[in-house]
Amino acid sequence: MKYVLLGTLSPEWAGKHSERFAEARAKLDKLGLKLESVHYTQGHYDFVDVVDAPNPEAMMAFSVWYASRGLGRIQSMPAFDAGTFEASAKLAAST
Image 1: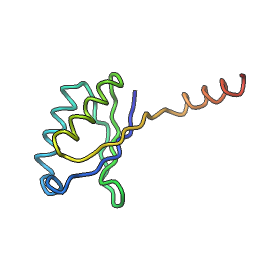
Image 2: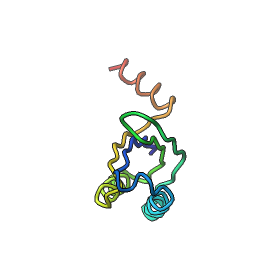
Image 3: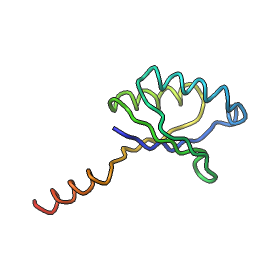
């Protein structure tokens, strides 16, 4: 399952990109999450990432770990491809 992560950086970690990224990458790998893309943004969120997770529990574990480590906060959203959306729309129309 793919997820879009909307994240913020804590002030303490905002200037420690290499260290923060290395720690987060190691945790992602340990939990079986594949980091597909990273985009840094301006505004309410500091970054938008796309990950592929083996299950929802792994995604939740990463979010909890990220916050408990003091790195910042993550909002995760399941991301569906166009085919899944189209199939869901057909199913919705048929009921």
